[in-house]
Image (cartoon, rainbow, N blue to C red; front, side, top):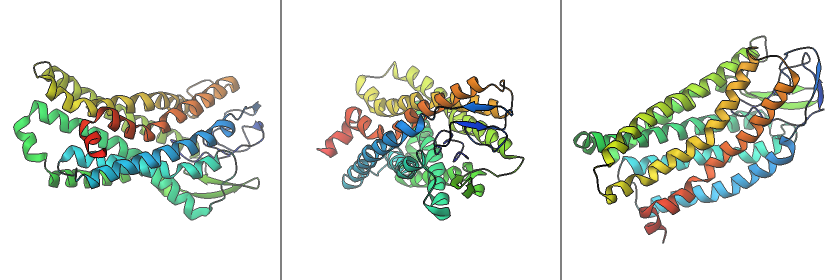
Length: 322
């Protein structure tokens, strides 16, 4: 059965646990060899429960963030606009979880339009969330390393302009997956698919995973790492009030990468398997499967953590909340 996308490799309906790789290509079967491989479909047991929990907590938490920002009129500069858009991006990603919770244990029942909408929203929300975190790190870097220039672009107008550019880039980064979204039928099951069903299937899937590693982790990590290495050096000479002003943004960055790096590693291994760079062994494939399922749950948890970070580390947020 087809997996739903580059970042949803383990959100797949349950099937018989003994399948022939040559029958079709999916997360559990990748046309690697002609021998049957018995898989324990762990996802069907814990992913629906976790996704439902993440949706409830994340939806309420991020709606609270939006309410506090709008009610408190906290949309005055680049950082606050980035936080607002980050909450919107998290809500987009979270909105797909109820559908994926059902899909993790059963066939896709929501039709072709919802398949396109749900996964399209997921991909765009995923990349937008990453890019807004990068924007916040650049904003903090400029405020410390180039304060004069920062005062010129730290305005609400520049924040809105930067946000529009980031949403456009997030949509662009979601291609080519957005081109292939749709429902296919296989063995009486309906599959919400994000890849072409032809001889290029595994090539497109592995390319999408490599793209996620580069655009969704390596480049953002490099930019954030550079920005905060400079920021931390500069902050050594500043007093604590100035340091506290950057604490929330730093915590948001650290939590994001802690949640998503493990999944990116597992996805990279999956891409190597699809490219036949790793040995075509059933046991290895099962280990990668389990890694993807476990790390995917950790990655999705990130979308409901940010509101708690704002409460515990954001002094301005707490003031307006109370």
